[in-house]
Length: 425
Image (cartoon, one colour):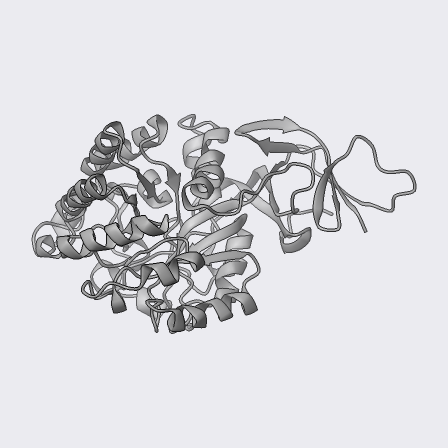
């Protein structure tokens, strides 16, 4: 049966226009009026926004190896719940995807269980140990890029060698910037809260110093380079300068760095992630970077752990928080409703820019395209309750936040993969 999406605003080419669509045999078609004799199911979407689906280039699906934290099934269901149709899965797995044999284990699970499109990363180094490089040429056709996420590549010579080889494949390196030699000094956060309670560990300098090295190498080698989860004002400044100098570089940040600073911290595992939430000045620099194009996209760094692993406060919990199911709602509430960003700009950062940079499927709402889409209710008010998440992970710093805006429907190929109870059809 055909389905008619009636009365919605459609997101096309960074603009919002009202139009009706029909889904027939999994594809989209414009609709001026229902076909004569049609038995189409009509979804009345007046006041709603239809988008081609969000894309997140930084998620942890935990399979193979850590299915007690998350599975490809639970993680992609969570992504669909949040309006995502495409995600890129990080390689912190067991075995890590550092060879075709290991990558195939992950790809088989994706093919079997994913309800949306999942593109894996491969490692930069064998076992993510920072030493022996992987076979980039063999892995490149099957991955979004190469990353040792969770660990910075400490050796400059290893990173240079990786960049020289990755450049030949046309893929990019997505780097977790962290200089291990700088991890013993400085507080996790620079604010009074952590100084008072003595939480030490990840200084801002450990991020931007390694980024500074990598940007120099990227300019020298010509490799496409992407910085994961930028969190400091110094990193934003370095990327802005590298772009002005013509380097082929990009970066992402996450909702928690844009909406929170160290003044919001609590001694709770849901506030512990790497890099950490930093100072107000860092948050302001990140927002400025969004506005001027220095920061290219927003990714969640969805990193689920068990409740027990997140029960040790800031000192004793594992690093990582979840975000796929509440990212849009939190960002819409904190950035769009407050007038910091236009809705179209937020959608560009979550839909268009990640697809272009990583070569993900170019999903649009044009005639003949697959009906891979999400429906947003911008007026729906709700409270973020992690106990209701589809993800196995529940630790989010946005727990209890009152938000406006939500995904109420996600489709892949015209088939519903998520439907909210708030969808009254």
